[in-house]
Image (spheres, rainbow, N blue to C red):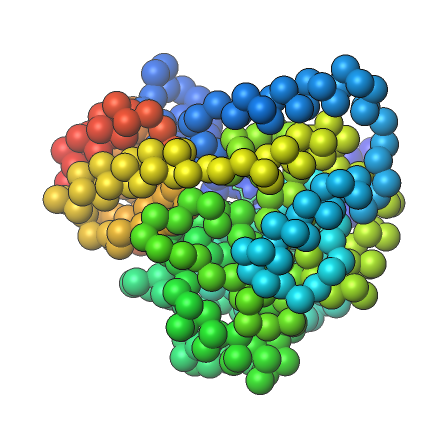
Length: 368
Ligand SMILES: Cc1ncc(COP(=O)(O)O)c(C=O)c1O
């Protein structure tokens, strides 16, 4: 039997070869200076660990209701209403933000529907959109990575059913300020474009506030999670807050797929929402400064305002070629082509020990 014949046709619409190539090259390195990591380098805060262990020991190891335990749903709503003023009261606890993105796309996209995706973008948006037969409509934001209502208009994004916002952004660290967020949401309202807002990096904001589109429009699904803020990427915990008919369809899909988010993580999530992340964020602001001040001596880059990445112009304009050279010199960074329709940049993560950032900056600068 030809085993490739058992694979669904839709799988050919997605491709993970770009990032795999990097990791294949990287696996040959003995002791790399790793600036490719998409998760925090700090440990899980003690009270969060303790609450997960307590949940295991007290028998909270079974399925929960699909929509999530009431304590966490209530805590999420209270938290989001305080921070964003979101009007919606419906919330689904998901298997990370990734789970929320998949359920939302499945619940909303018909084949041929256009999804406006600011470019550069987090990899999942493009591939999941294509998997479901949707058509990515890229909104180019080079060279400053600012999404604006004008750029949306110029890209013809009014034709889209959905607009993805990710502020602060992976891979650029760019953030949408309040004035522009108001203009973008009023553009979306006027053109009847629904907003999916991935706010997973919201706590990693260094130079002032990070407004949510949920503060300015009701045509929004807010996705957020605990992976980055609590360093629990493996626990798979996130949530979606949005209009009741959409949350209802996403809940139905979760029931027949993930069933529920991990029970122990949900109990820990209640504790996590009551904690401040102030200390870690100050440490990350300092890491951002080390990276930015170091790289700007030799590279063209924008100062990241949030998340923990910088998106740097590759010398010679070929991101993949530069990453190959960096890897030959033991520094792991990711080519921009993984996150973009262009191959002119590379992504550097500063979710690393300060000494690793210093070493990486020195080697990268020596390659110019
Ligand atoms: C922008 C963005 N959204 C979502 C995710 C996935 O997060 P989670 O671990 O909650 O699924 C990531 C992870 O890197 C991300 O960078």
